[in-house]
Image 1 (cartoon, helix red, strand yellow):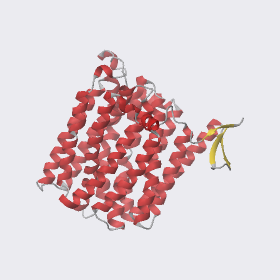
Image 2 (image 1 turned 135 degrees about the horizontal axis):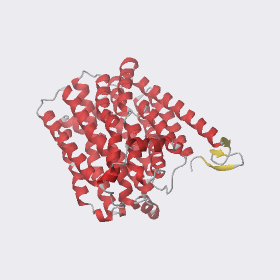
Image 3 (image 1 turned 180 degrees about the vertical axis):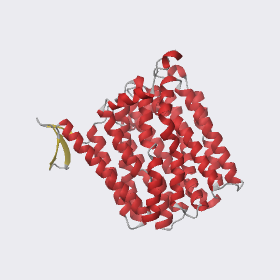
Image 4 (image 1 turned 60 degrees about the vertical axis):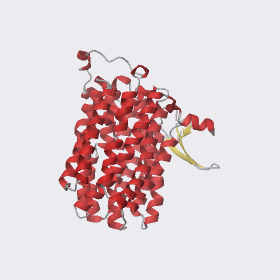
Length: 434
């Protein structure tokens, strides 16, 4: 057991990665607390409008849609460590300003809209740089483990943040929650400064004139020529747009369908995050690039359970179903992330990961207003199960395309534990979960 735990957390032995992970954990707890407080504040200021929630989500992710590819170019041209510092400093200033507006009682709905858009700009720069920076912290050998631990950190924060936020809002209102977010965002700033540049796994940056050759269009052409990278990105773009809107849909589901308070809304998010944390930890033992079958199988599982969440008639059943939904959601996203990142040449990693962030987060400006309108018109539950069915159709179409392209086929055999196998024309290749 001790050996397994040691293997699961082996990237934490690297000092620079340990600083990175702890700084992210502290910041993300505050960020998830802020998301809960922001959604609750929007509902209060807009008379429980799901459409207003959709607008906030869209504003938050529109900069990702517009700026992420340019940020990926920056990541391939300049020092990622310095870019992370600048982006996080911008985030800290914004969070502090918003907390002062809320604490003084001067906040209006348009303030929240503007705050969401500005935070989106910080995210558009920080996220692709952070994704590409992980390989410089640990090197290729530990990269699968480090990426899985990143997801574990993210989802640990999703467990702690919403639970604490729900209680804090009930006890102190939303103002102190925004203030805590501002304070917690100082942690990654301090830890980036404490990193040792000499211990980073990176090549020297080329002269400035040569960096101009790192063009966005070259990154797009590179991905287009690689079906193994393009397929998980296409599947993620559809599922991200149609189903990965739980920040919006769970808030609407809690308040408009089950008529619960902030603490109960926090329980929805916490249940989703508990399953997501298990899904993240399930990938920490991975030592090689995930297969396409693993990615697509996880996508199917995510879509099936997401659909069931939207159809669930009882509060306790929603909480229960959010556990496997969270598991498959992160297991799929993390496997797809690893498949993309571990299959990308280092010279293109910043631009490719920027494109990954674009399809993972940048589809929200398109999907969130539509999902918000569906939730307000047909009910929050319908907005979830419709997204689940769209995701399921996409995953099954991708699976069919890959089977035809590879010449493999699915075969179900009755074993002590029934499992699906991917079979070639010549015989059994491998279990689909390997």
